[in-house]
Length: 84
Image 1 (cartoon, rainbow, N blue to C red):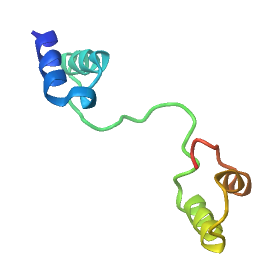
Image 2 (image 1 turned 135 degrees about the vertical axis):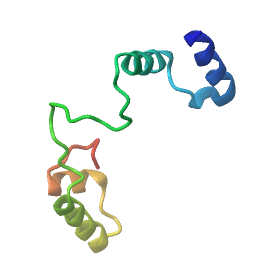
Image 3 (image 1 turned 45 degrees about the horizontal axis):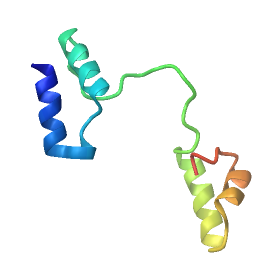
């Protein structure tokens, strides 16, 4: 039955459907009593690129020069390239 729901979602949503493992993981979470739809706090490296100070620094740099590169922003603000 679960596979049938997955297959139907693939037919309806195509490439935008959840991956099969995500469907099965969500089903197992729900089955074990987890019904919240938001992210639970978890361990790991905290985000450093989405705080107000960093955003303001990037805005100042990009407002000052329309020709600034992502690499320059990364070096000036000390964030990862993937975060820029």
